[in-house]
Length: 277
Image 1 (cartoon, helix red, strand yellow):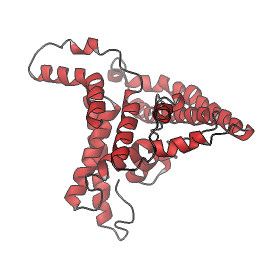
Image 2: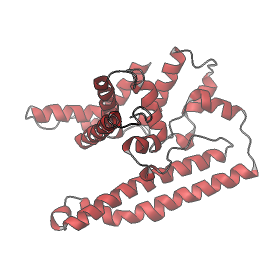
Image 3: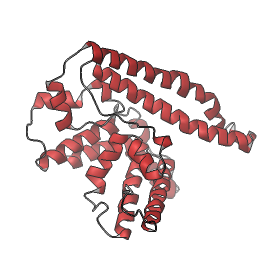
Image 4: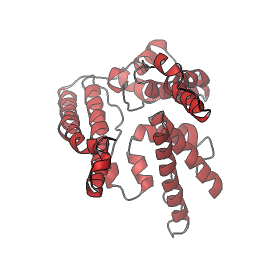
């Protein structure tokens, strides 16, 4: 089941990237696979991870009750379908079974949705005027100060855009009387790179910890193995975010920061009190 889900994800999201990379290395013109895969299935990265979660937890005996209709409700719950948060079957289904619509859930739901729309349309979209300075046609003609403004604006734009959607998803879920996990918890206010990742796209972080990092040995192995596990997770996280070399480099960059943080931990008196990932 896991292999099947990953093969479909690889074909649609990474097939053209791998083909064009190989052709570029061989000095060949672009291939014909990319135009065939222009229509990427909506939210394939998110529902693939939910498929894998269900298959893995079912195999390991963590899911006791298996019902096709409940599984369908879990997969096709539209507020979280496009961009998460990535749900867990055994947490979500009990909430569906006892879901009740109340004035309080409606109030909270509408409030969260309004906050999300404000983040998205008022803040994130307003920052586009600054971040477009980083585009190829503008970048060669602007000063270093404007470049840095664009970089910081891009970071804020990504946060307010994605966390805004998360608030909308949480609010829409509450309109059905269902509470789904929060996906952001002020990540830019955290004191180190480890805490940042624990509070940025929380459901994705927990998914990688539970289904990749811990099965590889987690933090209970030697220093070299821990750093290897961190780099594997951040590499996969980079690739998951996008099929291009810049996302892969982004994953390696964050992996290097987490490894440095882990090494720093080992030199301090609070070693092991904070896990590196």
